[in-house]
Image (cartoon, rainbow, N blue to C red; front, side, top):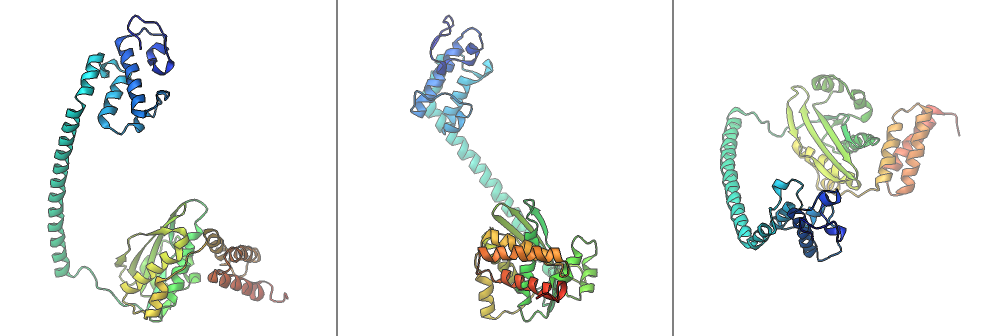
Length: 349
């Protein structure tokens, strides 16, 4: 360390920045050096330099506060002398007790505010429930015989928009297997409404369904989130809005199966125990195979386009090669070959 009359000697680890800049040494220069020594003591390493992210390594808030005063660039924020620094360290136990007392007081105030807010919210909720019950504003679970799942909106990683179409396809497929639903509009019928400005009432009339489901897919990295809203077609009244269903991308089947089960319960559809068990139990899928399947299915929508059909077959072949047990990918591949035989090259052998 150095006094006000010292020259710039000593190890660079302990030299204050102002000395390295060519300014004269002061008492505060020595305080900086003492701070470095204290920091190294706390780290247990006298060779460790002081880096710009040193605060992350000091867990104790009061010691971190003292060191910040040692290293402060503004003289007004620094310790005036070594005695002041020493007094601050000696009072550490007392300061810790004061900090704990302040924290307890703050926690108590926070708890009281939370309790008061809870009382207000409960009172408001009770009033709302009374109002709703009296005015019959929440419709009971309604039984529908027909339903349309509109193209899902997408947000998230670029280039993966096909996952939204895939989730819609999977949900339509599961709902179509429920016998008490007499009609679930196929995807070829609903895709015309992607990005449409038509009202839900108009869409339900054109499709001839009682209810319409809108969904949103959010996909970032390996995590997917799915949410949906159910509307009565004739009145456009919202009947149900789901909480986001979130899971790893490999569990996409489980995700949409969970939504299908919840939706079936919401529209008062009775499921046989074995069907309910199949919806609950869904296998995981390889993420790359799933992506290839969804892209292949999207290209396969145009049944009479030769290039689209060829692309669909190539993608679906890759999907089944990655996951040979991927049943719906095999089914989509078979449909692509059917399109090729009947629509594109009927005379080809």
